[in-house]
Length: 100
Image (cartoon, rainbow, N blue to C red; front, side, top):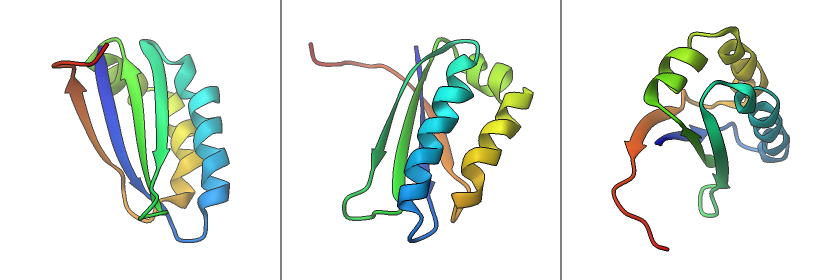
């Protein structure tokens, strides 16, 4: 399984609107993508305009090819993109170890 980690910075004062938009975008668009296995969204306490979106994919290509090169990616960006203060920083990870 692959973890996509997106570090998102939004415009100040838009947290309530973005909270709804990111959940709607994931549940209505990304969750239907090939290889999608789940997600988590965390919002900053010290930095309230910062969000960490974690999406779990079956393979790297499920994100980088199947989703990113599909019309669904533009749909997703249409929902959340208007809130971005900066382009998100996105990286991928594989699991090394975890607790029980």
